[in-house]
Amino acid sequence: MNTPQDKKTLIVNDVIRKRRSVKPEKMSDVTIAKSIIDQIIENANWAPTHGLTEPWRFKIFAGDARAKLGQFLAEAYQEITPASKFQQTKYDKTKMRPTKASHVMVICMERKEKARIPLIEDIEAVACAVQNMHLTATAYGIAGYWSSGGATYSQTVKNYLELGQHDRCLGFFYLGYLPEKTEWPVGKRASTGAEKVVWY
Image (cartoon, rainbow, N blue to C red):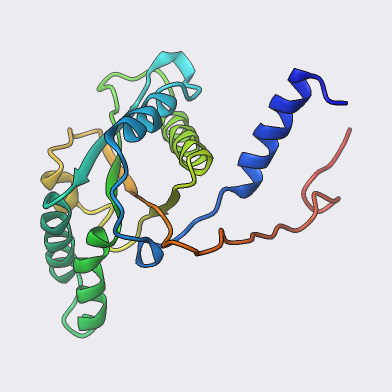
């Protein structure tokens, strides 16, 4: 018989191992309640952070703002892509992608001008915050997808988001429910054998 603590441990293990990356094209059109979004953000805020810099910043696009974001990202992709490499299908996909999710959270890192903490550690802190969001979403039965690439790291996107000189955009986190009667995706990992873990 499990003790209460055993049950909590099992729940944590289950949520971590059920977390999946689900592209927004596979999400439904059901809107996530703001109270759940607030909970996801609050849990992100409890990520580990060296020196308590708390560098994570989130810009949230919902409703009609998603289409505006998609239009901007498509135009940014076209702007930074040489004409010889431009793909209309990628432009169209980039434009529509934000509208496929309930919410799009732009993941940003605010960097202090005279920061004592190494840059990589602020980036790591933001990544931990995103993991907290993804695990919280999973616990609510909500799919998530952290996307980068394209114009993500460009000055064009940085200007659009009104980020400071030392700040960064680290990607876009898409959130949405799966369509009704869709089974939660099954994941796989190689075992934690000698190729991943070395004991001393």
